[in-house]
Length: 251
Image 1 (tube, rainbow, N blue to C red):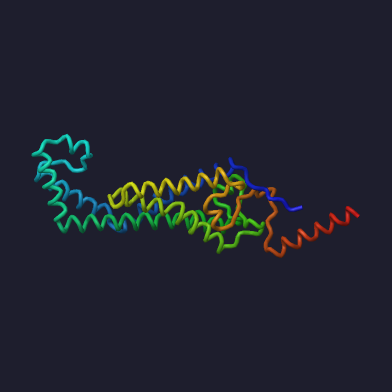
Image 2 (cartoon, rainbow, N blue to C red):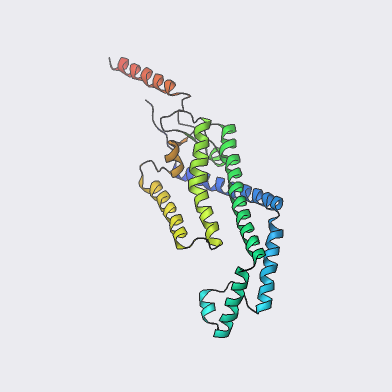
């Protein structure tokens, strides 16, 4: 008989934590490299210098909370509003602010993409059976739900469409927009909604299937005990042969 040897949840969690730590390290490395190539720090210093100049000119402190602003007297509020109005009308400040937003989006997008391609696509291709470094350590791997070996195209879709796009980049880009005040409560609700969907899939579905496995129709299995076939035809032959053996034993 052919049985599905699904990976133990604790092994999956441990492998995911290991891979997550490695991913963060690689993302930070790529982010530092891209930041250096784009000259991010120099532009950020220029913008900060402009903010400091207006703060000194108008004798205010920027980045006040709503409560701190409300606690100011009428004259201080008027000075603060005048400083903000002057900042908003400064073309150079607006240009630098927009430039830093674009640089941040580029750095976040490509550093995460490159890290995923390296750790979740190239490494599994080298190890085989969809094994990342974490999965290799804990003896688990990935196959199609029909028991067939994971092909590179499906591994790419699982990594880029599922893990990178849906599970990581959508929340990451929304977080960047929230940070730059381009999105408010709606962005937070979207992130929470995506996390809730992932939790429901992991907790409530029979196979404990996360989004990336659901999209790619894959399953995480125990490599030591799981039989993985090279092709659907090989799987069918195996099932047919063992069915014939069972019939012969019964006769």
